[in-house]
Image (tube, rainbow, N blue to C red; front, side):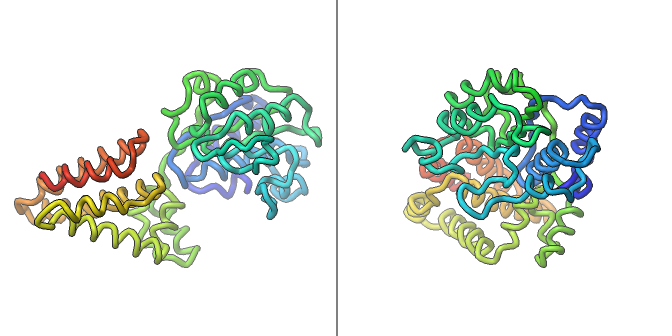
Length: 325
């Protein structure tokens, strides 16, 4: 995946291309932006450029090194086939690799950093060009993992580059932020999202609802996910219109266990409420204020879930506040 195939992120691509062409590449980058906007694609394009066998600052995208840099192993762990492109991600490596039975359910463990990064960063690239570490979801580094990475991140070995990918830079330690150079990625234009949906054989009309995220657009277009979101929104409506709070409390108890899944459902509820509020405002009826208030409540609940408030409590509190409006 060379730079020429990246859509909608021209400023980021130009920044990195100039750095490569001028020989002024930073040793540690932090790619910031929403999920599904191309951060990982650009990271792998940069990795290709660094390990490419062709004598050019930018990747040819065709040589054996370029191909292996972006070919993920079918066997676990699912990592690039090129030995000098190292992937780090929560839960990616089995306990046998990490030498520990500690679960990575809540974050990238210090064991992964020690076994996968630090043990490798002390040596030269296997094939002589460069050594590239790509950290998916860098905001999921535990405090111990982040602290163990600091010295290597500040003074990596020769020909070593770190690329940290994050949609939540505010959750990174200040010491990590100060040791990495930010490259910012914005939401993709609706036209780009629509083009991708059409290419995938999906409804391009869903593009405006995807918030500039290709991955969100795919989820929106999935029939099963669409039904799940519609069912949840309908359950919220019924709970708010019920004569008492019983349905509301039952809904809170039946919420998804996964925090990310709940965020997605709440995001859909927010979109649904925003659409109703817009329709009310256009019709100039007396419910516009109610929808606006409920929309603000849902956004506040999304932030609470993001801050690790228990999903059941966040959802219950949201429904009670919405019902009171």
